Image (cartoon, rainbow, N blue to C red):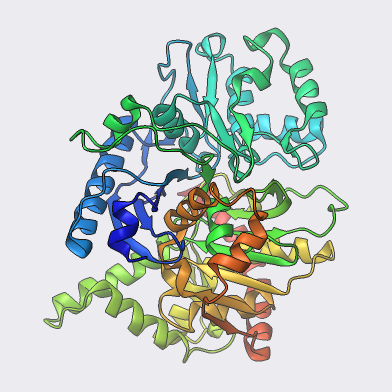
Length: 527
C-alpha cells in the first residue's frame, strides 16, 4: 500500500513520546517501518521549590503542538490530513510522581525522575523488599511523602507516571505498560504484575498512613499487545482541539522511554541490550537468569513484554556535552564564520577521534544533577586536568564524550561482575548521529559491539508507534518475533567492534574518573 492509502484507510499507528527536552509525535504505515510524518515540541524541566517539575498545562500545550505539527507534515508529504489512526500509543519519561485525588485533581506539582530527595524512603524500601529501589522510582516518591507526613497523602486516590497520566486523560483507563510499571513498583515476571509479596510487605510498613492498599493506588498492569482502552471524545478534543480527530481509536498500554527504546532498537531478547543517550543516559540489558545480589547501581525492570531487565540509569547524559558544543557554536558566530549546531558537533566529534586513547589525562564530569550511582546528591559539572595533562581540543572533546559514558560504565562493571554476557548493545540518541564516533567510544567503554540502525532515528516516538501497531498482531507472534520477522527483518545496521586501544584507554580514564569523584563531592559541598 502507498502511504496515502494507509492514511486514508486508517492503517497507520501514531506514537507520541514525552521526552525530557522534546515531545515527539511519529506516524508510521502498515508495515511499521516507514515514518509517514513527524511533529515535535521543545520543553524543559524547571527547578521549583527544590524539585524538578513540568507544568501539566505545558504537557497538553506540547501534545497539541506536536500533534498539529504532525498533521501538517502529513498534509505536506501526502496531501491529506489524517483524522483517524489504526492505533495510538503514548510513552514518556519513566518513574516520578503524579498524585491525584478522587476528583482527578493534581495534589502536588509533578515530581520527575530527576529528583533526589527520596534517599531515606529508597533506603528503607530497599532493605524492606530485598531489591534495589532507586531514588527516582514512583514508590520511593510515594513513600517519602508518607515518611514526611505530607498533607496531601490522605487524599491520594491514584498515582501515575507521566505516560500513565496522559493515557488516562485520553481513554479514561488507569492502566500502564508493564515496562513503565516496573519503574513504579517491583514486578513479578511470572505473573506480569506487581510483586504480591512485596505489595503486602509495603502495606504492612505504610499501615494507616496511606488511605488504601498501595496496589489500589497504582495503575493496572498490561503487557505489550494487550487492550488498554480507546480514545474517548474528551481525549480526542484534548489532543486535537480543532475537533477533526475521531474518537474510538484503540490505544496500546502506555510505556516508559526505556521500554520504547528497547523496541526501537530490537533489544527485547536475552543477551541483547541498548543504550539511550539524551538528558539522561541509561543501559537496558535483558537477563538470561536472575542476579545473585542486590546492587544500588542496578534497577530490575522489565521489557514491554514483562521479561526481566537490568537497568543502569544515570541522571546525567549529553546535556553538558551539548553546552560545550553550544559554546563553540557561539565562537564560530563571533568569529564571523557561523556554523549550525549539527556542523559544530560534526567538527568536534571528528576532532575527538584524533585524541589520545585515555583523553590525555583530562577528566570531564557531566553532573548537572545529582547522580546516585556516583553517590552524589547534587550536580556540579567539572572539567579537570593536571599540569602534565595534554590539554588539546582533541583530548578535551574525547574527555567530554568519555564523560557521558563514565557513570554508565561504573554501573556496567557491576553487571559484568554478575557474569551477565552481551552479544550486542544497540545505541540510540542524538549524539550517535555523527557516524562512528560516539558509537566507537561506547564500544570501547563497554567492551562489546555497539550497533546503530536507521530505524531508531525517531527514537521512542517510533518505538511506541510500533507497540501500537503490535496490537493487531499480538495474537500471531510474541513481541520479539514480531520485531525480528516484520519490523527489523530488512533493517540495516552499522556495528562497531571494540578497538583494543580504546578499551585500554577508557579503562585508564575510568580509573581516574572513579578516583576523581572525591573532587565532585568536594565541589558539591563547597559551591
